Length: 157
Length: 293
Image (cartoon, rainbow over all chains, first blue to last red; front, side, top):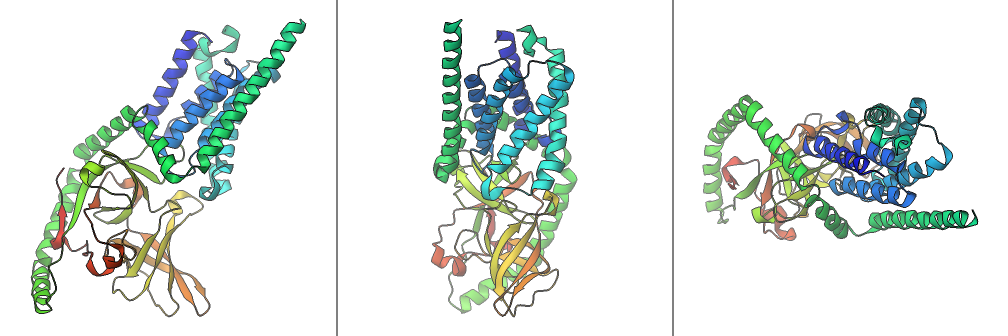
């Protein structure tokens, strides 16, 4: 991965934390941390992507007192899955990237929901009403970022 | 070519192994005891997340200073009225205690704190406080606002604490009706959507007859929460267990999302067994003291 791509990923993570943890925007801001994991995982080895996912998930878990570790588990798998998807899908087209971020975000939320145990919220309001728009939001922002910042695009590496 | 394939397989195996190790680490984190989980969380909050949480606290304080003047003025006026109305009550109370040879009440002490709400995933029922053991805040202390019980402190560090509000699945409070006759245990009831979250008062006597709008207060049983904090109002009967007990839906007194400042009850050295008898009624403003920070 190019240093510029690594720098952009770090900036994305910092902006995510600033918007959500710092300014408390919640779902008003896109899940830039997961966008960074999914975008970065296309540029990394599977183990690096999984490690990045683990750290990002753990950072989110640190703020919550409900089902500690669920976010780390889900984001690790999302990172590893994202990196592994490179061997299956080689496209960089907008429809593909949209589907990639959409499935990545929704899949990560589904894994986190499944791992939440007793604190698990209702499926329909959480996974359909709340998570689907969040996945669309993340997909739109993810695709836009890849278009605006070619350093994050795999074809430019 | 054969070397490249072998290298590829080896890399694939290392990747798989690393991913399995990380997934197992996450699974172990989920199974750790609460204290260890809090320690890991605190390590992140006091390092990587510290600047962002500091920004959150500063923004919350700034917003409160700029926009809440009218609300604070209204609260101030209401409190003045309340104090004036209860001055004679406090005097009567002191005289009656003297007649019964009861010792004077120990005033409840509160530490003012700023409520910091991170907007990250999974934090909808969790908030952080900018006070800790240095402000005498202890685990399981009650977090209250001017309208009632917001939640309970869970993890305390030197200058910060983490707390849950009443909508958290782990929240429980022993409760009673305002006249002290009906007792039960209050727990959250998740609505289909978070805005529909309610509280349920369980385990009250089958013959209890609480009516819509009746106040439900903390009873102080167990010693975790002081007696007399408003939890909410009765909405309706939730269920009856034939001949045994009755449950009621409660409208919570506090909207957690709207809280920027709160107070944490501190310095309660009451042992659990003495809690019911000794812990003063917090709603009695004559015996409550806010400790400046």
